[in-house]
Image (cartoon, rainbow, N blue to C red; front, side):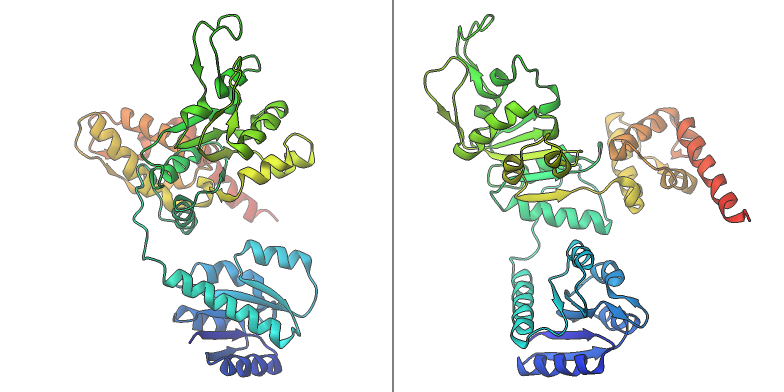
Length: 401
């Protein structure tokens, strides 16, 4: 039996859904506003919530992020009285289970509820939390917890993974973590830097060559694709792959067979593909810079890494982790942190993300010498100046007029 909550200001809709819920032998409750709905959801124990879009105290879609942030958030089925394609897109992006147009046929509503409950039961009955090997992966924000869940799911699968995110967010680190927690962990993790592939040697680098295949080919060479046999092939910055190579690589993905340069026979390689990019591949497809058929092949499991500026609560644990590493590396006692040190770091925009943070922390560590505590004064001047200027601009913007 499931626990169902209906959040709708229409008394007739509430009564209809309550009746339907009870007929399906589930427990049902109903409220008429977002505030009352959130209050009930915070108590926990709700499996599925029907959420109206137009409510007296706001748009139901705006409450999705708060609902999804709850420790035991329910599956959400959106209800709306009008066709709204943009609303449907927002709902799906917000992680809702389904999107129903009022009035929906009873059968359609029952089916949506049954499927949502079945999905939730599947999650609940899964074999407990997955114990991931998470070397160097740090974060406690809701966004990072969602990424960890995605990593756990990808580690147990065999499909291709596409990791997207800005430069410095740790895309290769996440790919390695998936590999380390997969059935292929004992086999190689082979990195292909697509941005560094030269047109003259790209085929030889990827597929290998036979001795004498071209001038300078003094011996056989095993390509990166073959080196990944049994393991994982990671295409870093896949958006930089030239179009002519995309076509050749698509065939390798489809058949797991290729011909080394100068060879008369094809060879096989059983690899799992992962790829990463900081570019918008969908936009590149529209502009003709990336093959749509290749994109479909590589993004079976998409994982998006959030920039550091959107998860400031991760800065402290990242600092503790990195400074701990540096203390161990330099054979020094652990250092503490002054609160102003964190205050400055949390006020910075971090265009280079975690990679930039770690660089700044190393500079501060070196500047602190033997001091047992890191203070804001130890941080690079350029970082402190940018944060100071930003903090001075904010009051001016509010005070004008």
